[in-house]
Image (cartoon, rainbow, N blue to C red):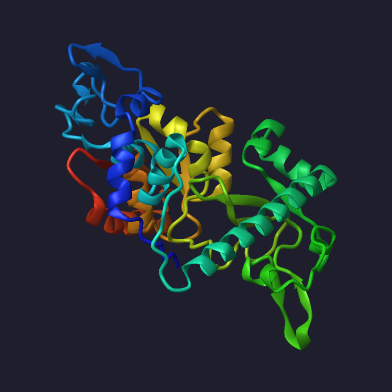
Length: 336
């Protein structure tokens, strides 16, 4: 779904020449001076000695323990889980530069559409959050699941009211075509339009930059489907995103591992009990893209599924899709 415009090589060379790698690393990992270089314990694998070095003259980092090696861009990709364009964007912002892009055909339009859709999704997320405060039934449901208000706020949990067109109150123009493109409304037979999510506890799904790109909605009582996700849209793809990853990044780095669980509620409940490094797939099997994202952030990925037949099947699919992207020094574990 994403067609990135190309960033010219000459700009990347210039950006790296203007960037001080020591500053970039120091802002995220404490460094100590050792002669002409700087050293610390490696942020990419668990070690007691300081075998990770940063060279100000050569402007690269190297770990003698795990072999991690690269520039300021690769550091932000490996340490922060950023994509290449995001890492370039971060460094350019710090250097006060605008990133030039060689636009591909239709690229600008696609980028503008994505910006419009995330703005609509954010408006919806704020509306659902406000509605939760006015719904004792939804609040009681979350309390019964053991959640505090602080955790609900951290994950931006909301409530979609039980009306057919509740979102009419959130948007000036309910007939706006982009509302359907964002996956918020459905155009039914006879041109009648209605909200996709009704009478559900709403879990906003964020991308790595923190933009709301979709939702997962859970029924309060008995009802099918128990979980309803946003459809595939220009900004949301179930196989690419992981629920809770945006909130978990710091905890994942501190713990040196990430736990992949089956549902949104599992992520939130674990966070409630102080385990903040959990994420969930979005109702599909773990994909190679998701596994790659996680291994960019940490060396150890623990898949934690139910011990029943369905859980074992999910674990096997996770194993099959993780093997193609696993590398030396990376670890996939399974917990039932």
